[in-house]
Each structure stands twice: as structure tokens, then as C-alpha cells.
Length: 171
Image (cartoon, rainbow, N blue to C red; front, side):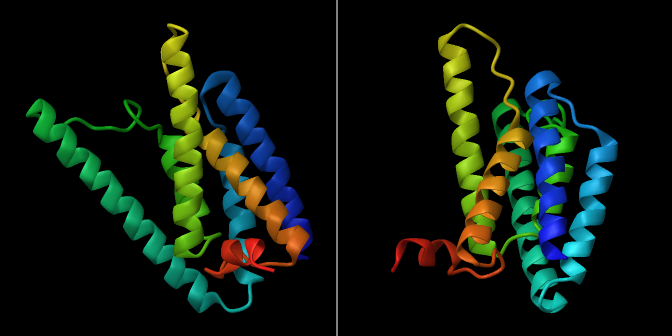
């Protein structure tokens, strides 16, 4: 059953990648479908307590990042600016919220670092080419999520365990 959920999440993640690269917009129906699949995956996981504990920690970390960004912008510009749709899209935030249920805190942090690194490279390349740097962050999140899902499937690992990534390189 979980392989079916992973497969459907993969299909919808490819849709997120396509939409975000094409038009920098997300589809609400895709997000709803991913939310339903996330709920099914959480329900079908080993135990729901660690999943909710990890998701709570991941969401707390995201809130800390969001408020830190607000404060830094306030310090720089001396006025409160809503960063939604100026520096990060609402779809990106909602997609991050859903992804917080899929990972342990260390793996979630690694997901954020890899996706932000790929997005930064995209922005640097766009700026060097003289284009406006609009980064499809949800697409990079989906790419890294698909990569992690493929690694977990190939190694019979679990994204809820902090040692998952470490165990890939230790044999």
C-alpha cells in the first residue's frame, strides 16, 4: 500500500516540478491530492507519534526561519513587509508544510539545504545571464523529495529515521 502512495506522490511531485518550472504557479488540486496522500502515508506509517513529533519540530523550524526572515527584512528596510509572494510563494510554503510530515528533522534539514542550494544555483545562473531570478523553489523541493524517495525505495530505508542518509554511505 505504501508503494502505491509513494508512486502517486511521485506522479504529483512531477506535476509540481512541471508547473513550477513552466509558470511558477502551483495547482491547488495537486496540493490537495498531496495532502490526502500525506495523510494516508502518515496513517500507514509505523507509528503516528514520531511522525507528528517530527512534523511539529519541522514546522517549528520553518516558523523560526519565517520569523527570522521577517525580522531581517524589518532591520534592513525599517518596515514590515509580507514576504509571501515577494520572496517565497504561498504554494512553496504549503508544500513545505506537507513535506514536514515526510521526514525526520535531520533529513528535513538536508532536504531544505539541498533544495535551497539548487535554487541558489538557479538564481546565480539566471542573474549571470541577465535575467530576473525567479526561483521555482517548490520544484527543487519536489526534485529532492523524489530523490530521497528513490533512495529509500532502493535501499529499503525509511525517511523518518535520522540515520537514513548516513547509512547510505556507510557499508
